[in-house]
Amino acid sequence: MKSKLPLSVLALQASLIFNLQPSEALAAPTVTAVAAGYYHTLFIESDGSLWAMGRNDHGQLGDGTTTERHLPVMVVAGNVVAVAAGAYHSLFLTSDGNLWAMGYNANGELGDGTANDQLRPEQITFNQGVTAIAAGDYHSLFLKTNTLWGMGVAGSLGNGACSDDRAPVVLQSSNVSVIAGGNFTSFYIDINGSVWATGPNYNGQLGDGTTTARGYFIETLSNHSVFTGGYRVAAGSTHGFYSYVSPGFVVSLWGWGDNYNGDLGDGTTTERDSPVEVMASGVSAMAAGGYHSLVISNSALWAMGDNANGDLGDGTLTERHVPTQIVSGNVTAVAAGLYHSLFIESDGSLWAMGANGNGQLGDGSVNDSHVPERIIPPPQLLISHINLTGTNLVLNGQNDFSSGSAVVLSTTNVAKPLNQWTPIWTNGLGNGAFSLTATNVVNRSFPQQFYILQLFQIY
Image (cartoon, rainbow, N blue to C red):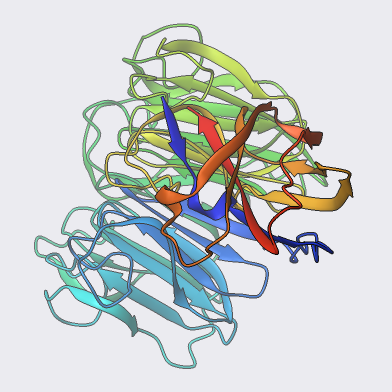
């Protein structure tokens, strides 16, 4: 199918002298962090601004509406340093160490003391020194001074409560270094590298060797303090991952829980109630989605699990039971939603693939994508040089869109609607640098003539 991309239109005005100017390249925005909920996405740009797209029925995008957004909208103009997304709610951390929240709140996951949805960001902590945030499906976690706090649905927080906590409560008073939230599950890593978990456990998603639900935190992986570096834990709907590092190098990746779609990447579809090693070395980040998983190893992106919506980005809808390389290098961060995936490259570009029925990929459509597509910076048609040779126009530039066709239209009355302009030249246009010659398009017999170059992309 061919469709016109309005942002790719470049107007060229010509007279007997032809006053033509090339496009000016604007500074491209760069993305520093990304998070994915069930059907929505949040990201932070390098200027500290927070952006959002996708489903918004509970105000999870924080733009003051419940309008679904298929293109990114700015939510906060600056000072945002971290972001997290639950099923239908969102959290972010500002540079002053305070937690903000918006969206679904029926279980108190926003921590404002109510069960009311919030359509705009609401400040939850004041001068609290918050250092890390995490969102489970219907609960929230945050960390300050090695103390773990939480709020939200009962049974998720590890404090034995039988009712929802609608305001933040202390869950662990010391020694907490890393946090993660899943589907009614919570995880933390202590300063020795041990993993602790709480919540339902019917798929072994706590990794403690049983399928017994835990109302309080239980140690599931004993300490690896011999490795004096950082630790990571990631939680999906019913599976999780853990990695531990020596300085600057992740030693191994372990996974546990539901594996029906090959989510764990161990080559089987066998449920694991104890951690199994998935990758022996090189891993620097991971994300667990609804039924799929993403891993960065030696800067390459790998994916495994469910792929019914193109979640893995390998160009197929084939389920993968072992890690499959999607991008060969330069990947720095990943995020996984229920059925969609995102990653950031070293140049600060944001890429997305998978389900897009609510616009969660942010490409302006509701069409799934089975391969990664660049979302930020958006694709551009850049004309770097224009030259008039006789009756020919020579155009040089860069096309960031996929291959398509270029069309030149002309009129002597610029007030005419575009559909009344006359197509006078067409040519194929590939992706990347181009040099096109529009032959015999200039009519010097008119005092003034106007031209437009349009790009039609082939999806």
